[in-house]
Amino acid sequence: MSKTSHTPRVFSGVQPSGAMHLGNYLGALKKFAILQHEHECLYCIVDLHAITVWQDPTVLKQQTREIAAAYLASGVDPKKAIIYPQSNVRAHTELAWYFNCVARTGWVNRMTQFKDKAGKNTERASVGLYTYPVLQAADILAFKATHVPVGEDQKQHLELSRDIAQKFNNDFNVPDFFPLPEALTQGPGARVMSLRDGTAKMSKSDPSDNSRINLTDNADIIVKKFKKAKTDMGVMPAPGEDLSERPEVDNLISIYSALSEMNRKQVVAQFEGQGFGVFKPALADLAVEKLAPITLLMSRYLSDPDEIDRILLAGAEKAAEISEPIMRDVRKIIGFLGA
Ligand code: AQP
Image (cartoon, rainbow, N blue to C red):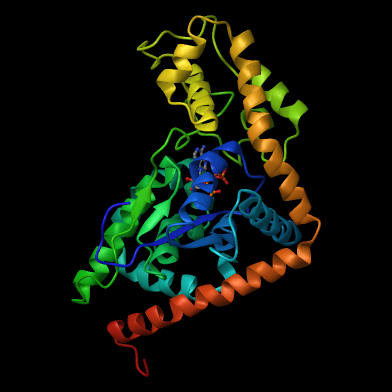
């Protein structure tokens, strides 16, 4: 992590908008457990982001617990890191409003994720979906977080968070009040693509379940999904071969690399010239080996929802203790009466 004048603090979140998948795990979760040993970390379940598209209220609660269980099962320790639901800490919504008044519409108009998620009919998308990246800036900066472990798809939003922090500091003449947060996206799992289309990211909302490996999939399903994964008529590439025209093969190599801790060169060298009939089962075995313990632990945590709720509510209290003094300063800086 690069140096900053602010105390390093890590913030990240996952939406409770569906089953977590291998992309969420490799792009975000896997880094969460590592970072908690070195830094103060807040890992939020971003339910306010989830409701930017319709969520059934009873399902939302269950999905919130499932994300918490996934955090815990991936090794996040509530004694070391703060785990909590976003809606339980008021600073998120309050700061989001202030930032709505700082951010420019031109900046938000450039966000590609809104265009992807809203599809053709942007007029029918919620206003919340449009201002989603502003709320994301508030999530991070309500804690003056300096580092944000995320997948590559979030890089543009992180740039916007930096722009908002910088503009707030300039507008109110408080240089360095907010840090300029940095995305931590390094690593081979930063951009896991769909198993059906190597040019689209693996996503919870993809209608095809075969496009992703869910953290709740059992061994048989994982094996079947990798077997069905799109490839081509060729064989595994040779070292140095250009894979720009073979995105699906490129993606499977990245997944193998991220799961095995081998670099891509080593993976390519190991499977050079072999058929997918050899590579795919090896990849499926590796995925089962790495994911099965997490799936098992998740189901154990989920069998005691009261305990999950206790962890989340205690986490929310700790998070509020950090954000409240920051919010008091923010209110004073803006010039609110009584602040
Ligand atoms: N395919 C991916 N590869 C690497 N990282 C990924 N992340 C998501 N997809 C990939 C990272 O996972 C974290 C949590 O993401 P999220 O659930 O909050 O939102 P998302 O990015 O919108 O994820 P999905 O799965 O694509 O959800 P839907 O389909 O609901 O939009 C983030 O750090 C993200 O970068």
